[in-house]
Length: 245
Image (cartoon, rainbow, N blue to C red; front, top):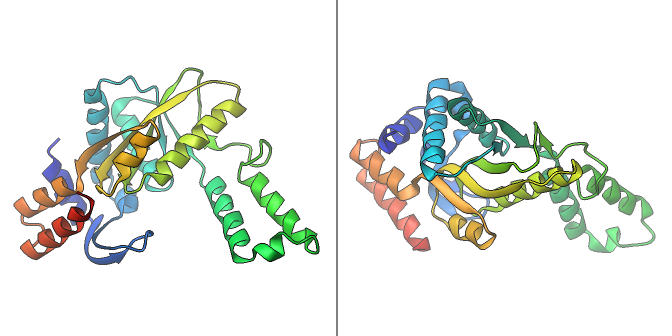
């Protein structure tokens, strides 16, 4: 499938925006990708699913199951599953939320939460940790869907920036498999767009391979050739990407 056609459609439905956006890292980006809007545009969602399915097929790797990451990755995994006939599962969001909450509580007031005079606070943290899956009881599932022994599971998401969410998803998949008493493996991540901000390198360091339908540079090139962005917007994107070269 032609990358430019996909990129142009994403702009048309508002899934790619241009301007000045503050990212989670604190960096200011001249573009923003929000594929959470795709379920409102099923034709574009299926186009994305088809592109990722074709990429998986061309990679020559037998993937037994796809695993979508909340939120955008779930709809994309479903579309890819329909196009490829590969079964899909998805990770739950709650474990990561609870872990972040515990970390925030301890960071905000370590003297309080480490104090013997505040046993209720420590008890609260214990409850939250259990709910977040750091102990074997708590949330009953870290992954929803069927897993089978020996499965090779491909992580599916919309974009990759710093790889943190992909590594978290793999951790949850492996932990869930262990809870179910089976062995699975997860060594590949499939996304639509690689933002080229170190995500590929971060994944490789942890033993995972990244496959992307297009890079941010390829996206920008395609949009420029189709007249979807101005020369100034194109220059802003390429200048931004040059920071990671």
